[in-house]
Length: 94
Image 1 (tube, rainbow, N blue to C red):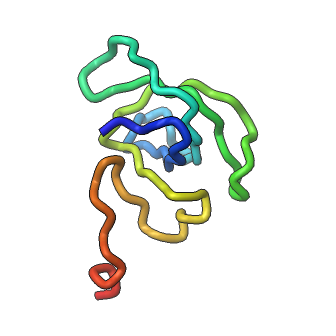
Image 2: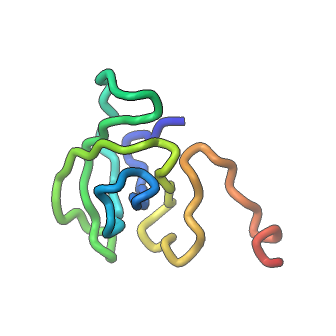
């Protein structure tokens, strides 16, 4: 499943080797440009730890490597893969 406008993502090396230093990214637009299978161009904003936009960017990433967050504060919890079902809290407690 592709990210959507407004999604907050945790982008790491799993999405592309260029992200040695992980970043938070709020999606503005998902381009429909032809790319390699499983890859996508995203426009959006890099976020700081407080969730404030600090730089507008376009990034080329593997969708399977993206982790979707509900908010920047969710980094304290295990991020999930885009499109993966959320794990119930009771299942994580073990």
